[in-house]
Image 1 (tube, rainbow, N blue to C red):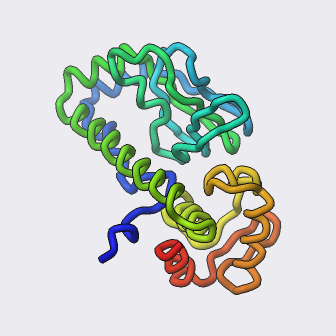
Image 2 (image 1 turned 120 degrees about the vertical axis):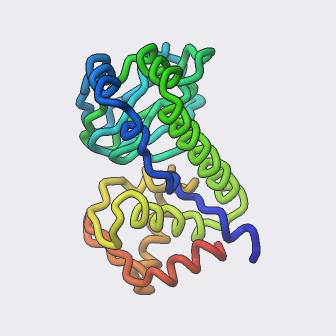
Length: 231
């Protein structure tokens, strides 16, 4: 098999977060006592690149992006749906500032865990620590594959990757309401909003997808998958 077919521009790894299941009741109580739940509106910054780290963030409900920014240029690293961590780089003891920013795509609720308490749980619970390592490893592999695809895949393949990611890993359905603007889709696929609009129109006319306002459906999954793999 050609190794390039194993890579995807998807912004979310397939690893399911199970770390909280590794905690005892006392540790759960300790975690809750050192957590706050914050609501963010669509478009609101959750964390800012370069700001001091004080907590680890867990997406209870919503959707956000993690991205690097340099002036007017930005690069989306990951999408964060329900049940995933945001700001995991803060786990490292030597990390004092966030290396990236986070922004809510939709109205979201995030659990913020005091960084010292979170690090204490890692030190005292080996199973919890092992699961955190698994999550970080899966995230790294996902980001490596994403960078490969953004560098070498053609535009149609990159957009197909994102649409498959949304269907398979974010919404887990071929039919859903798409909250992302064409500009936001362009950021994910590494292309301009105008290019995204043109390509979505072609996908729609060719019967690969159906779009009606925010309503989105993958009509021909096999063909979209083929475009992703050969893009």
